Amino acid sequence: MSKVRVLVGTRKGAFVLDSDGKREKWEVSGPHFAGWEMYHVKGSPVDPNRVYASQCSGWFGQLIQRSNDGGKTWKPVGNKFVYDGVPGTHQWYDGTPHPWEFKRVWHLEPSLSDPDTVYAGIEDAGLFRSSDAGQNWQETSGLRGHGSGPRWQPGAGGLCLHSIILDPSNPERIFIAISAAGAFRTDDGGKTWRPINNGLKSPFLPDPTAEVGHCVHHIAMHPSRPGVLFMQKHWDVMRSDDAGDCWHEVSGNLPTDFGFVIDVHAHEPETIYVVPIKSDSEHFPLDGKLRVYRSRTGGNEWEPLTKGLPQSDCYVNVLRDAMAVDSLDSCGVYFGTTGGQVYASADSGDSWMPIVRDLPAVLSVEVQTLP
Amino acid sequence: MIQVELPAHLRTLAGVSGEVSIEVVGKVTQRSVLDALEARYPMLRGTIRDHVTRERRPFLRFFACQEDLSHESPDAPLPDLVASGKEPFLIIGAIAGG
Image (cartoon, rainbow over all chains, first blue to last red; front, side, top):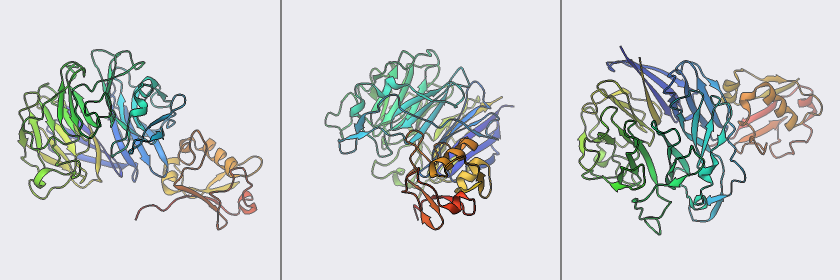
């Protein structure tokens, strides 16, 4: 029978949750790297035992950990992230120039074809790549070197490159997103990049439809349709049917279109999930009710999923990298909260249960479906 | 041998308990002690000093012999008691938060 492994990054360590294909009983191991902020933990799709983790601390900086046995044991690998050339400046919150400075790794994206190749999305925004299993890192500097770089500005969480999507049909194509610069795409393996923000509207910008400056919170793609992208923006849920060339809003009947996570069902590329959050000034669910919203029509028509989720007095947040799906026949959906719960649904979101409920604040959730 | 006391998180990272003993060739300074420490425990590179500038990370302090040496030149000699191994060189995580 298949198994599922859930990799959870929290403010105070990483946890590995294991279950069989029924997904009813879970074994929790951890904390790994107790006391450290674990921004992201993700396994290689080629070799599920190869797992990478971003470990950081305000005191001791950034570490990258690598496991070759599915998260049982770990080894620190390379942690030297040096921008290519003279980094220059981006915009600070008040619009003044601010030097580019490495702060942390937000997201690790292992290659779809090589377990030793992995991408890192960092703050201040940049894309790095390792082709030796995390020992050495080189910047893919064409992104930061895009002419708009000096106009990028940080979101509330910093100028972070938080989303990396590798196109399974075209190894030269990568999508990334930065708060608050927007989404970008390369079609030549990272040498050159173009902003893909046409159709986004951000009233906090002097020009709400500017080429860059949009606070994209997360993007998602179904591997069978790499030209279709879904986006949870600061406000607005968006969709593109042409690999990001144009976006249109699909917030539809959502009670609020602010939020952080967005993900796609493993087998139904028009079924997507978001967790609406009240507003950018009140980062918790509306009315104290934790509701996942599902659209089976690729957006616009949304239904609340509440069975098993707290429907009163719930004021947690669900952060941008804290939702994932498994690929079992009945698709499992998972998300973690800043209250330390990880909720799972083994029936595509119809019903939910907490598979662990008292962890530190959850920063990221990734899922591996194992044979 | 120079005795170095690490913060708890870095002891875990380096896989050591208690003070570590480091052999330093030549003048005993912050730089030579940290160079030797990082050579013996490469996983500590970047956690005490910036990879590029080699400057002390801002939330760390260096103490020895009841003195704060954080702002001394990295090439200044450390106290004789540290150089002779009688007193440890302390790497301290600054108190931050409640």
